[in-house]
Structures are given as C-alpha cells and as structure tokens.
Length: 530
Image (cartoon, rainbow, N blue to C red; front, top):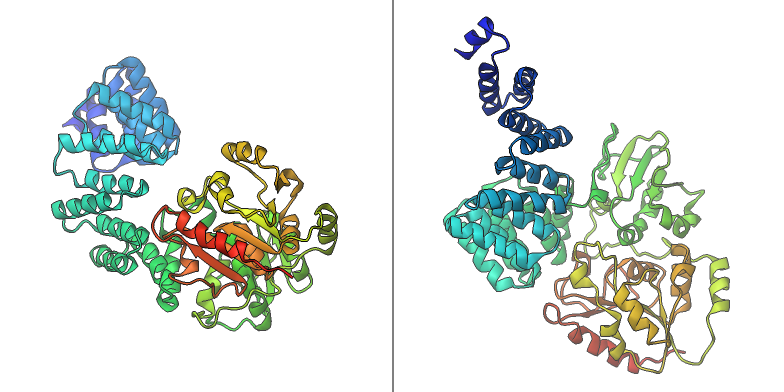
C-alpha cells in the first residue's frame, strides 16, 4: 500500500517514513536510512524521523551519524526519552562513559519505568568503578521487573567487584533460577568462585556455561585461566587461545591480522622465517621471551617484536634474530606466532617450563652508573615495588599502598623504590620516609630498572613487571600475591616453577595483606646477606 502511495506521490512523507520503519524492523538498515533521508528532504523538522534514522545508523555502528540525528530529534522535541536512551547506547559503545551516564539519566527522568535504562546506566557506572551506584541502579531495574535476570546477573558482577562474594553468588544463582539456560550467569558464577578461591567450583560452572553456549568465549577463556592456575597446562594452553575471541580482553591483546599461518608447533621451522610478537603487558613479554632461544634451536630465522621500553633488555639477541620495536615495519616471514602461544606450541607442562636464564641481561654501563649512585653500607639493599599500573584490571587486588608496606620493613636494611611512577597518596607517604630512596624519572627505561635490580640483595614486588624482570635475571625476588593470584603463580606454592630465584608470600584470605606481609617481615628480620 505504501509502495503504491510512493508511486503516485514519491515525496509522500508518511509513506516514506512508514516504509522506512518496515525496513528498519526487517533489518534492512541501509534501505531504511535511504527512505528516512528522503522523508527529511520533504520536511527536516520532524523529530521522530530523525530518531528512526539515528536508530538505523546505530544498528550499523555508525555512531557519529546516529549521535547527530539523536541530537536533532532532541532539539526538535526534548520531552521524549528515546533519543536520550539512543545517545546513551552510542556513547556506551564509544566508551565515553560520562556522556552515556548523563543521557541514560535524562532518559529515566522522562521515562521512570524504563528497566533497560536502569540496567544500562548500571553498566556504565560499573565501567567508572562506581559500584555502589551501579548496584542501586540494578536494584531499581529489579523493582520494575522482579524477574529481570540480566539485572540479577549484573548485580552479581558489581558485588563481586566489591569483594562481596556471597552476595554475588546468590545473585547469579537467582538469575539462573529465573533463566536456567543463562550461560553468561554460569560463566560469571565461575568467575566469583575462582576469585573467592574455589577454583574447582569455577571449572564446573564454566563447563556448564559452555555446554549451554559452546561459543561463549568468556567462559572458555576463564576456564583456561582456572586450569592453568591448577597446573593443568595441557588443557589450559588450548583454552588460552580463546583470548582472541573474547571481547573483554584489553586492546593490547587484539589479534594481529596477517595472511601468513600461525605456527603452533606442527610445521618444521628449518630455514623458515617466523614472526613472534608481544601481545600483552611488559611482564608477560619478559616472562615468555625465554622461548625465543628454543625457536632459534629449531633452525628458524626469527623476527621478534616487543614494546619499545623493553628493547634494551633484549639487546643481546641482536645478531641472533631481528629485534623490532612495536610500530616498526615487519620484514617478510613464513609463519607468525603470538608470544604467549609459544607454551602451547612447545607443549609446555609444569615440568618442562624453560628456564629464564639468559633471556634478559643487564647493561654493564648501566650497572656502573647505578653502582656509583648507591651508597655502600654493611646492611642489605632491598628494592621495593608495592603497586602496579592503576589501569590494570586487577589493580585493586594486586597493589597495596606504601603506607601499608612500611610497618613491615625492619630498620636493618636500605630500601630503594624501583617504581618510576608514584600515586599521590604514596608521594605523601614517601615524603615522610626519607629512609626509602626513590629515583623516579631517573629510571629512563627497563635497562635502568634491571641494573638496579641486579644491584639489590633482594627485590620485593607485587605482581607486576619488575617481579618478572628481577626473576628473569635470577635475583632473589619476593613476590606479594593476592588471595586469588594470576594463573602463572599457581596455588599453594611458596616457589615458582617459572623463576627459581623467587619466593611467594600469599594472602590467606581476600584483601588480607597482613597475612602476606607478616611472614615477609619475619624473613627480612632473619635475612643474612654475605
């Protein structure tokens, strides 16, 4: 009928917008956009046509165009909630959380019964780590719909982030009761069990999630982390490859697109060229660089790409392979392999972890430079790293403050901060403790940090890149670990199969740094350095 109307009157605005709506509902977004734009040629001041056009652009992930038309719709009629909600969706996808939050709030003010707006608002508040506010938003969504399983699931996630594990478990179980085939809730239940130290239960729930939704990447990925944490490397490395399909991995983990095939140990590398590239953080690159000599032993021509600040650590590999900084042009190659897929390629198990010796060396000139800086005293030199990057996903649990650490440091030693950056609170604490030497910007790159580590008697670090650096050069390294550690530290061990010179000090319950720091203090008091 509307098509016939358009044949008689091609500019009939009602027929154009109604046909556009039909196309929009059928998923024919490009066609819908064309029809809505034709309607606007007849009258560009109709708010709901701009709204529908924006919705079509949103479906095509053309966020800039969508935002333009949502704003125009609001300009024409500011009393309608839907364009504000649409703006919230756009800014959410663009990760502009403040604007997303603002527009969801506007949407709720105009439509207080919108349960999905409360749900989405809570999600953005979580991204801002405003967990109590997120919980309040989810609870309002549930007041509007007591069977809102997505809201119960999100409530579980927010409570997990606050360390309220029992509450989180109850909310995930409620979501599953309402929706028994809710794979994501089973996966999230696995997450909270893993984080609360019940790793076997986490595996059960991840597998349940996968049985419901076999392509649920997050469940596969987190299952692999639990398996690796338990030392089940054969299954863990296979599952670790799901990181490429899991949307929630950080941007630095994104898969590199090359036409060449990925090498995972099945083809001969004799006289072939393989490109190996760092994919995650500095510590990961330092830890897994130990596999490069094994690749060289296979007769391969090796190209290795690492983060620019790490280049100086691996300078001794120049001549053995081509060493590139990220961003440099990559020569031709036959195969590629992400650095952290090498354990899978070499079928590494708990007994065949390659030793780190020789993967990282210290610069003789930097050693000389820092040797002149350090004052010689007849007491131990202790290097300290008490916090990692604030942007790390697990920073809240793996880092502690200098104020927490200081009471456990005996006076019979010299203490040196091996951190380049300090948080404001730590700057204030350090100002009141001149007995701790901080070098700050004098640490130009990791070669300076490596030299300082080498000159220490002991390095004490939380789970961050300096721990890997000190361990890789064979320095006695004492690592402070949260109750739910990263997979590479395994469970219930005081040593690390990755680094023979390491000793691990673990929390006995979540958030309880005292339980890790007390034995560390005792070890320092009994330290006997030649």
